[in-house]
Figure (cartoon, chains in turn red, orange):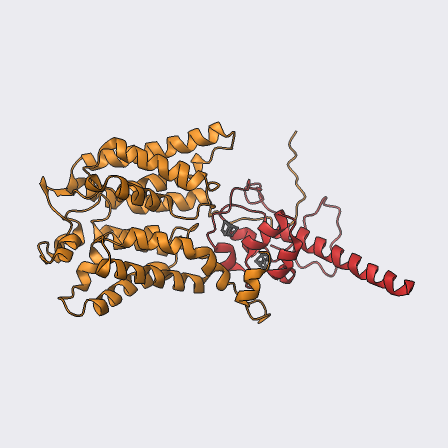
Length: 120
Length: 318
Ligand code: SF4
Ligand code: SF4
């Protein structure tokens, strides 16, 4: 469930390739998202004991402070939550964005701190 | 043009457990109890059920049409609400009251708070509480086989115990609401949902056990009848189908234990000392309101990480 989608069949198979999955049209169907029904199935399935539904709401609000407070950076992007969500919410996908945004913010803060120090 | 090849982020597969499927299974597990309710209480019960379902679905459709929202009637949640509301009404209720209740449940309790997944209390129960307060006589007049009388629990509270045998209670041959009388089929329906992993065993089992044990403790003076406590007063339908409503119950296992215990405690308290003989709806409603707090308190610890600091988190932006 953590594999990368390949754009074309010309991608070479390398040492690190552990498998190739070809999915049928039915399996690869991207379902439309609907409202979270708070069923808790994502919470139950997360191996990192996160609460994906809260993280998802945080990312949607662009509230990255809350994303971090709920330990969103510990998400291992395994995809269990998105797989099990009855409302087909794109949870893992949203956490990838969230993590990227938090990392970018941190990097910016670090660069600013460094610049400040050098200016002294 | 839609392309067939979508290069997207993983995961690329999805379980076939969808909201609609879950709601469908809930409906399926509720149908037998409705049939037996109709059998014992007369054909009128069927009309009440149909009226509630049609009114719920229609009001959801109309509301979303008026607000230019995408219609969600296809996820069947309105049908479940209508069905549950009907199961909590006496069969003699005037149809227009049932329709009012359904509209209240869908529009005021569900959609005013943002639709599916956002309501803070269970729509069917809130509607029932509203109706119980607005039309107390119509809501508490029962008749079974043409003879009207109080429900066994009300009779017990009034002091005349045991006019209905346990067996009749078990199969549903007693006064009561349409869907709450037949314990056998309710238990089977609940077990089916647990088997299919739609609900977990935690809430119903702990709720029922707490109610039975605490009523025993509180009632130590009088004759104690655990079977009648469990089999009457809508405890089974409440524990299996209402308290387990996803939106209004906690998401973590620990939270569910607390919530179920709270429901049981409230029910026992209301049944023993409260003004109403049947405390199930009110206790679930009260615990519904406490759910956000429970959820916050029982947030799981990640990586043994910062010990969940309740008070700090209360202050933090959530
Ligand atoms: S993708 Fe992240 S949040 Fe979802 S189950 Fe895996 S670790 Fe948990
Ligand atoms: S699994 Fe989906 S619907 Fe259920 S709580 Fe998580 S995000 Fe919400």
